[in-house]
Length: 562
Picture 1 (tube, rainbow, N blue to C red):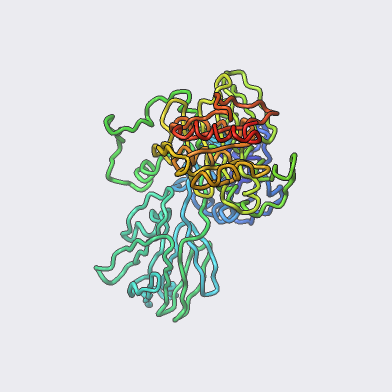
Picture 2 (cartoon, rainbow, N blue to C red):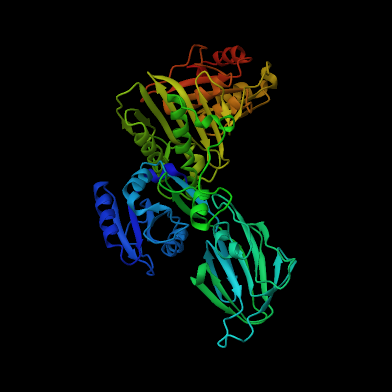
């Protein structure tokens, strides 16, 4: 989940520890003031779903790390992002102080917070099927008589290969988040858990000096076989089972991550370990990165650079929900004809993007394919196609995109196009370098139509295919005008023809293609003008070298140049 998606939150549910009545009252007032639904669950009780599950929901825990772990257990399987409010005495996972409650929440629903993906682990076997975020502890059962044996032997395997015998109190398998708990005390390394995917096997009070912690990838299948009786605890006992001699369990990275909301009111990771765990590497005073090493991200953004960053964050925020619905959308309706499908995914994507842009740029106008119209008071207007290639999308085809363009006084000056299935991002500001996933791109230098690859938009009677197929290397149609223009910009095609376009179809792609060196005109070769909202206009884009030849050939067929 991306932070900008948080701007669409409609409901907040809080898991509350005892003695938090005053904090709950503050939260109730804040949600009422912000028009959000609000409900609470006492810690230790299971969350039911009295709200509409289609609503965007934020989970909050009020308490310390123990309450937060309960929140992860309840929220993570539902894909609900979690924000922890610290009312405890010592908390490492929960880093928002209760005094900053309202400010941190306001930042969150404005889409300005970050979402930190945390690796979880999954344990199966021995009548246990559980997920946790910290660690799995396997150790000898506590004897009734303190002088009785406290040692157990465990065999460990990684992807079927024998790791070795752990002879001691037991072992811990931890995530990066859990690396600051038991595994740290046992000599394991500390991992920065932010978007970090790994597992570590840590011996507990081993009887061999050479046995050290072992780090493996998060998809490694760790099998542990008990040679003697042992107890297994997940996240401090939130799941537990007794192992008899010969029992085995499998531990690996969980398929689902925990989505933890981080705001500017949180301490950073290194401050947290310094203050809470006595991290000795930095002492009591922090230092600034030397100026020569600071990136350009620390410099003041221009107006368009700021707009590009926010638009990029917004389109990436829709990847997860669009991929979840891809190919299994049920509520499909037709807007004008059978080629113009709209689905619930269009509206979901549009809501996330427009909400993020409205929050960040309240004076900007917004126009969207799905009939959204926001009158702005500035020279800037956003043109949004929240799902270009809806027919492909509804049928499970990966060729769809999200397109966001920005106009200044009616002229396209910024473009962002994102392909969620391939995670490809094209961006450009007018007059600057076009980029694909942060790398510069440019059009081809082919100068012969016979050696060129063409892309076609909607071709109602097959005239373009018929007229050009024999004279070019090939003609392809993806079903997304924005992708066609981006492939032209990236050098994956030499020319693009679109039979008819709405402004939101091509505004972003035009900026990207022209910034990459493309020539964009109408079918007569004149400067292409964005059509009005209710109008459609044909478009031709080429690498520039074959443009005149393509235009001449189009005008040989009146059906293609109208």
